[in-house]
Image 1 (cartoon, rainbow, N blue to C red):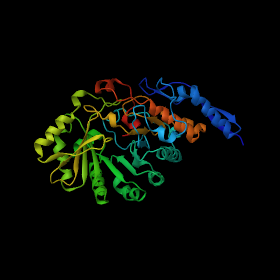
Image 2 (image 1 turned 90 degrees about the horizontal axis):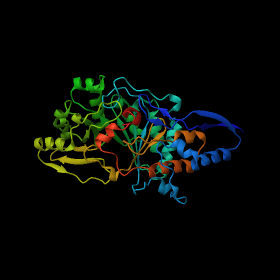
Image 3 (image 1 turned 90 degrees about the vertical axis):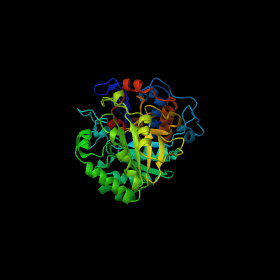
Image 4 (image 1 turned 60 degrees about the horizontal axis):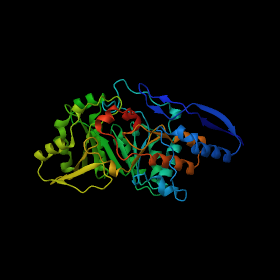
Length: 399
């Protein structure tokens, strides 16, 4: 039985107002009479022009990938780091318009047919989990605005070998959805909140909804999530005066407040003057709270973790700008459009959607993934170089 197979031609497609080149290319259709023919086509492209087609860097595919154990080797980069944590962006859409995530003029969203379907998400997730990924985090955009998020969670939570299914959300609609999401296997919750002042919330998000976010935090606590992680991006002149107020959230409840250094992405008008470094935040906390104790971090932790005597919860600092944690990085990202990103701050991406729709089998997809992982650099550039590097807006990458 004949069927259509898409053939992708090498052609640059720039993002709006940038010189960043996507790997998604113009499509032709042609007939393929047998399944083996389509697989052969995919493999031929993998061995030759396919590498140029699906890679956004000039690096060629690695020749040292183990053919005997592609599963064990796929997630190990050239520096020996094993990547067991996959962040999956379910959508580019969001019900807030946070300054540091989305430009004031908004962003051009990927057309729906070019986004991964639920079945494609689950298939790719299963490929990663069967290869050694133990933790998946669902991001966006805002993941809870997807109508099928419960079904996606249920399917992902049933993947053999997956230990943690987490979500990062702005909390606007989470409270009413969380009971069902927990039933569907959601094991960990991160809620983004940058201010405890409703008027400032409306300013930074360009929307109302502060009370709903607080309701979602309390709902997560009441449902037994421990800890409930609260992510706070600290920006000078906006919310650095609220650091100690946020820590008060940890006094009586199992909340882990995570203070994040302000990071540059396309359209968020990053400026080093807005950056409040970890050392300054820590100094502010130490002066206000006695009994601040450093906890032992896991080698792959992105955060520096602390506990305060007498507090039920904990405090963490994510120091991406001033003290990067690249040496222990175990994270990979699958974007809503199917692009695969090995570093949050790196511009290079490779499409998994395109070979998947071309008819690639799991072995071919593992080769594409493994080659991208092998190209991962030892560390990202310094903060000023990152600020000059063309990268997608955070709303496209996934928080």
